[in-house]
Structures are given as structure tokens and as C-alpha cells.
Length: 461
Image 1 (cartoon, rainbow, N blue to C red):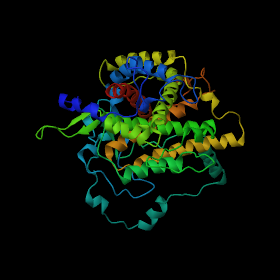
Image 2 (tube, rainbow, N blue to C red):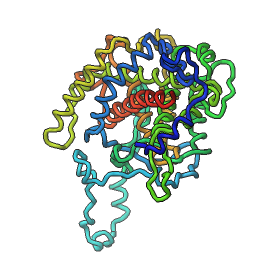
Image 3 (tube, one colour):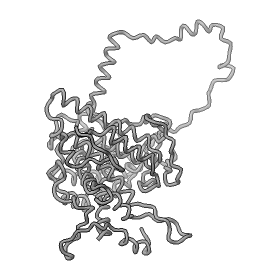
């Protein structure tokens, strides 16, 4: 919450690109000029999503995310960047992530945190006389030869694994470097992480992993500089990919603007977190974003619609989850809250229709779907290159959440608004606890971004 003195400064920071018809009417700011009418490539209107989110979705998610099941995220923040040497680790205190002590997570498997006992064998036994060393080596040697039949089976296994729609590289939950993080103690907000390192991250995402139109595009200071005209020259699948990534990027930027670190006006007081309208204008005003800001905001709604549809499709599966929290009596509360939330999601009448994607069964369609999946999986690996632990945490979580949504959309016996995935067919489709936590929290981040836009609108009038 900002101090009165800070709030008095806000009117000085608002966008100057305001257009009005009548002062008695609602003021329309250029930053929000595209947030009306239908979402691109969808039949749903922005106004419908604003109403759904701000009145029904956001309040429920905000409450749900405080529960033990959803607030603890298991993640490996020590995984090395697979693409380049990270030499720009953020040293600011706001980049640091406070990980959970093993005993503080109520549902964690205590066995995984148990320390190994001292070796029960004596030094004498380990260092004894081995007269028959050669014989032991021969008898204890492994036979690593494989039959041609076995090798063929392994190729079949690999082909099966590759056929699964896994859109993210998921952290190995058995790694010693994987830890639980309390998301409520490590909120997504401005950390001071800026400069060459984050620019390299987003440049790699957009230039090397997003699909491009046939005509080359010159990328600008923010690397998602594809105009709507350029996108219309691409197929629906490639437009979908781009708008998802742009919507995710936009959501992250809104969080940084909404929870910005202000130095204290009082020299001896603590710093304050709050909305920075000047920063918001810098990122989304047409005059300071090469005309791209309003479209970036609209892409947020596209990403929101896609993840909303994934939750609706997975509702039958999620309604059969136990949501084990490790706290007596809380499991039932979580299940009831999840069921209530999913009921709101399912009742929404204008969902994204994934059946329009990858239509037909041609070799070109199959190739495009593999490229779509592999490009997104590569973006999940790029998140390990983020040089700020708190930014890496939320980047990995939100990319995994979006990847889980895509996994849901392209799973099941069919695609389309009537299709679902169910826990009755776990041989074909499963979600881990980590994927479910990421899915709900990632959608929660998109939801909070749309909710924050109302606040920015009010501050900029």
C-alpha cells in the first residue's frame, strides 16, 4: 500500500496519450485502446473476460492460492543454463528466494529429506585384504551387451515418449537440488533485474524460438515486435504460439509495474511496494513502445483464454484429485474450493476452441505440431538461464503452467469444446502435483494481471 504522499505523485506519471469523447463518459486511454471487442482469433470479447475475471475468477483464485497445496512449489533453481554461461547472477537482495526448511512443508515426503546414516561398515571391512580381486572383478562385472531386439524396443520406447505432448522440460523431483519454495513468501514483483541478461533471455525466446513470418522482421528494444499485420500472414498455429508468449511476457511486465519498489520518501523509512504508472506507460503506451503496447495487452487476454479452456477441459480430472495438504481437515476444504472454482470456469460460454489448431492428419500438420511442442519445450529450458533466482522461480512456474495447459488441450480422445480429460484414463493422461500447482498459479498470475489493469486505468484517469 502506498503512502498518501506517494499517491499524490501518481497523477504526474500518467500517460499523456489520452483521448476522450466527453468528460462525462469513461476516459479512454491510448494504452488500453485495443482492450475492447473480440480477442484476436477468438469469439470472446475482452469486456466479457474482464467481468468474469474481476468478479468471479480472481477472488476465488486469490483465496485458493493461499492454501498449502498451491503455495508450495517444488523447483530446481540450481540447474545450469544449457545454452550459455550465466555470468550475471543478480546480487540484489530482492532477487533472492527463501526456500523452505524440510520440516516446514506439511505434505513433503519426509524420506526425501532424511539424511543418510553413517556407513555401517568399518574401515577395516572396506579396506580389507582382497586377495581374489581379479576373480571378484570378473564375477561382479556387468554385461552391458544388448540384443538387436532390445535396441528395437528402446527405439519404440523413445518414439512413444516423443509422441507424448510434453511441452516443458520438468525438473527431476528426485534431484538433490530440488527444493520446496513458499510462493507467498517469494511474491513476483520488481527485483531490479535488468540490463543485458534479461534482454538476452527474451531475445532468445522471440528470435530463436517463436515462429516468424516469411518476410523478415526487425526486432526492437523489446523483442516481440511483430505487428498484427505480420501475424495475419502466418497460420493460426504460429499466431497462437506467438500470442501465448507475448501474453505471458505482458503479464510478467504488469506484475513488475504493479509491485514496483519505490525508495522511501522518508530517508529513515522502509521502501514501499506499489503501482508505478510511469513504468507502465513506458512499457505499454504506443508512443514509448513503438506502437506495440496496446496489442501486447490484448495478447494477455488471449493467453488467459487458452489457460481458462485448459482448466475447463481438465475439470473432470481435477475434480477427482485428492489435493492432499498434510493438514487434517484441509483436504476437504481445498477440494470444495477447487470444485467451486471449476464450476465457474465450466459455466463460461465462450471458451477458446483448440480443435481449430492442427486440423487434418497430413505430414505437414504433424511436423508443425512437433515444432510447436519443441519450440515451447526449448523456452522452458531457457528459463534456467535467468540470472535472478526470484525471476527464475516465477519464469519456470509460469512457463510450466502454460506448458501444462497445452498438454491438456492436446490430450484426450478428441479436441473441441466438448472434449475433456479424465482421471479414469491415467494410462493415457496424468498430471503431477507440480504440474497442477504450476497450472493454477500460472493462471492466477494472468488473472491478477487483468485485475491490475483496472487499477492502472483508474490511476491514469
